[in-house]
Length: 271
Image 1 (cartoon, rainbow, N blue to C red):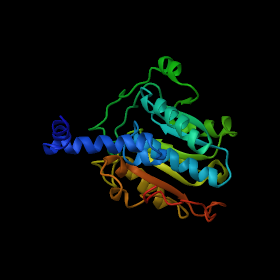
Image 2: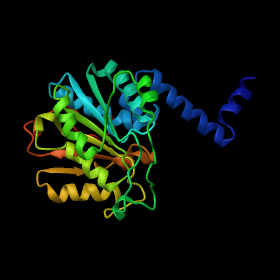
Image 3: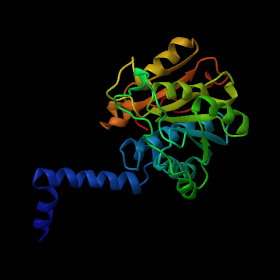
Image 4: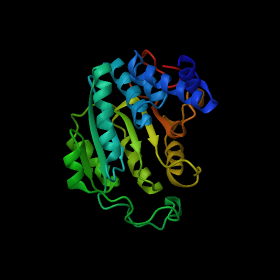
């Protein structure tokens, strides 16, 4: 009987691979592994959310903050925002830091556009509308900021000045023009964000530096001398998951805390 069980576990090859994969996930999830380990090995839902939020929370805590803000640009049906709340609850248990969560969206779906950089061959007016009433019933603590992102970032700064510094942004607004608006959140008020901010751009795969979100990143870097958005290299050494290709980091080299020594500062390296 023992031999039969062992054969089922290890033979043929696909069973063996699945068995060891199951053991690894079980070990990471229940036997002492930190939340960041679980994110790296995709053992949590939407690991890219958890990975970015964990790093921003750890940086905020090391810099003396007791709370940090996470922003999602492009909420649509709201599954991402609900997941952000889930990640916040779990990361707080490990790092003991609070999260302020905000979701920016037009509510009515994508606006009309004729700008080739917005990829109108990929997206259409009205794509990704929001059921605001239904979403608000599902949210526990996140705040919706409704309207054109080119205007609502100003409202956010005026109405939520007591929120924690921005440590993480998830940008899923599809358009180049909307991404330009979202990046205005990194204005001149350095007290409103951490010296380094985790950024996740959902729609960069398959595009290039002349269109879409990558075009907006290129222009941001071209027009700013001491504030840059760049990819941290080395993710593929950790995991083969495609979400690693979408992670960037905002740097403000003149931020008062940029040179402050902190533990585990790099976002790459086995946690």
